[in-house]
Amino acid sequence: MRLDTGLDARQAGSQTELMKRAVLAAAAEHDVVRWFTDRDGAVRAAIAITDDDEIRVLHRARVGRPFEALLTGTAQDPPPWLPLGFDTDGRNLLVISTKEAAPSMFRYDPIERRRGKRIFTSDSAHVQGVFTGVDGRPAGVITVRRGFNQREYFGHDDRALVRSLAQRLDRNVLVLDRSLDGSALLILAESPSDPGVYYHYDVGQAAVHKIAEVAPELTQAGLAPVHVLRVQSGGHLVEAFLAVPPSDTPPPLVVLPHGGPIGVSDVRHFNPEVQYLASAGLAVLQVNYRGSMGYGEAFLESGKGEWGRGIEDDVDAAVTAAIASGRVDGERVCIAGASYGGYSALMSVIRHPKRYRCAAALAAPTDIPLMFSTSDFARTKEGRARFAELVGDPDAQYVKLRNRSPVYWADRIQVPVHIAHGLKDRRVDPEHSLRMLLMLDALDADYVWEPYPKQGHSGWSAARERAFHRSRLRFLLKHLKGARARR
Image (cartoon, rainbow, N blue to C red; front, side, top):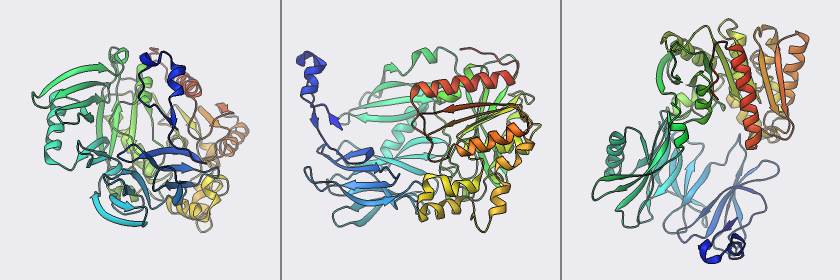
């Protein structure tokens, strides 16, 4: 990691001269996904991933000392906590628990390796980060709650100010920064159909001044408004978001279940993928099915063991509600997703073959028992145990897991399918897609196969992502006849 020393480029004369003044701030032997600095700007903590996909929380007492691992874990069996940043004393870390019933933020002394005072807890919000106030002290937490990314302030005055600004601007408001004396704020106001506008807010004058639009070329394109649907499913209240593009008649619908499935959620903020599909004349439905975060611990836990059953029941209930609303054409519906979302797409057309015209699955698990022997998490006993907790025991419940695997029900897929996979995927081995292709071939089914030789499960290059989304859109439009392509 290299940090600019603050030299003005105009004074330096050139970028080359500027780089001569750069200094090495920190280095680690593993791939670092996030660095953390103390209040003095010294890099003293990090989250790293080893070549074996082990997660390591690194720390050093001061600059010049080597980093030491405080905790280790895996994606399926994470460390008991992860750092969010340093406290104002420069010694304690502010960390978020990963295994407690209610997500909590607390202080942790990395020198004594001792947990300290709890600062924040909630049974209905997922904590993602912490932010500080003018004095450098923690001012609140960044959470996901009921489909919103938001900053929850510890102080009543800050909470009231943000609510007032949100009402005034009729948008979601995020305070990004403030002046040292607290007299001015930098805010972003955005919505699901607006990528956002940056504003300068004068606290004393209560005056808002526009600075710049995030993507003015998009705001002029007539982006699709997003409606909230709430439906009952299996004793749960499930929330879904329906983006409907401007149209003289109800547009075709693409159902877009998210990945995960546990501890992930779709949010009510600007989503480029949703608006890209909407720009082609397609309505888009996102469903925060049971297991999604931001709706409380009980709702999160209810998604365990519900692959291919309760989760898909929630998706189907939301689709039924979207069609019943009259906003979309219920005769032209496709479903598409990635990772678990791809699995959900395949299971949905297996369970409801007459509801959908097509399905698209990227990096989809098609054989659940296979995950226990080929996925990166299967390298550790803890990882396998964690996954068994989420889907079922592969030894005691093999028949159940097999019956919930799309590859064994391929003969029930009666619609065209778009299958894509990164061939370097270590989370969901490409074997999952290859097995599905063998079954579809044997059945002489209608499918499209798109391998991406250089891509893994995530971290795709921008060029490959664009290629995939364009290809998938062509597939969707082909099978949703009458949709307008406005690209």
